Image 1 (cartoon, rainbow, N blue to C red):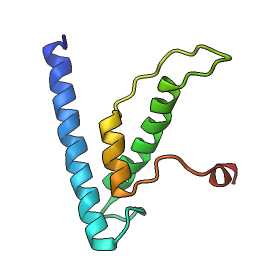
Image 2 (image 1 turned 30 degrees about the horizontal axis):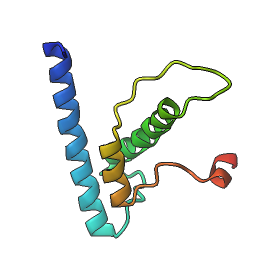
Image 3 (image 1 turned 180 degrees about the vertical axis):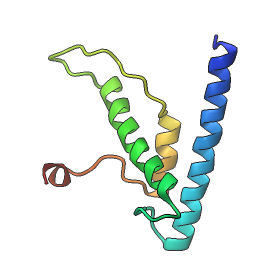
Image 4 (image 1 turned 45 degrees about the horizontal axis):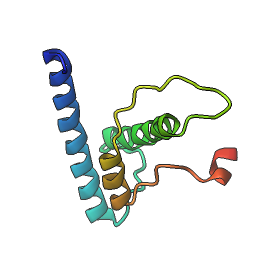
Length: 102
């Protein structure tokens, strides 16, 4: 069971996540895509998308641990449900190999 403080933190975090997903939906409705670039108006949204990509990497690490090393699971706030929401919006969570090598 979550402590009252942990529960409050979880609820506040989820409210913020939902608010930013709504902003991302509005961005997509306006621009036709979710390829958010940094401007004065959307810095929080850009950081949100970047954080989701980082969390996705942690999520992948946690569900598919390397067979060579049994690393500890890292704290991840991204759930399978949230991943599906982001993918449905068109967010690219995993960069292509070519882009990572540049």
